[in-house]
Length: 249
Image (cartoon, rainbow, N blue to C red; front, side, top):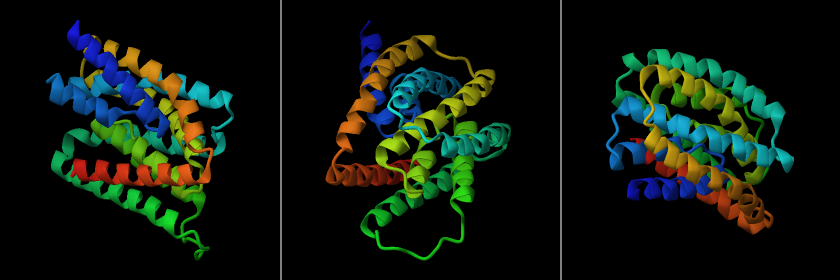
């Protein structure tokens, strides 16, 4: 009973925090399941991605009702991410974990630094050699590989990419949640083939995260109503992604 209550509380906290920032919480769930509940890696990966899905769906519906999802950009990212999930899953047995962690860590640190740099350098810059369409595909591929290889949500590159493409924090959170729904469905199906789900752990986390996902959209909208608050939320997001990268390393 005590472990179930702990799982619900963790799910609630992660649901509010991560859905507000446009992520699925896969990395946090994965850490909780392996470090606290000592689940095997394959079971933890399958459980974390299944756990994140219901909250993402509910959060996306709430964002949709508020008209915050950019479907044009989101669909492009999702279409590029889904094949990458499959490729990443097929390649995962052949990729040394250390090499994967270093690559993903460096990418996340770079994306987080880019968000912070952009916040402090709003002056017009030279036209990028990469078009927004191409950039969105690249971010989608990076997110998809994170899901396919490690069972993570892939929210870091997706949310960072949306912010770098000029989306507001609320818009980035909403569109990222939408993209992660499609990614998580494919990722869950693949990882279920490689590892069983611990439904006891998943059940408690899902209950808490569903409640958190309902609270998240109003919270992020309130936080980003004023320009100064939106600035600090984006700054926090950039730092958070950098910390994710450092932790991955």
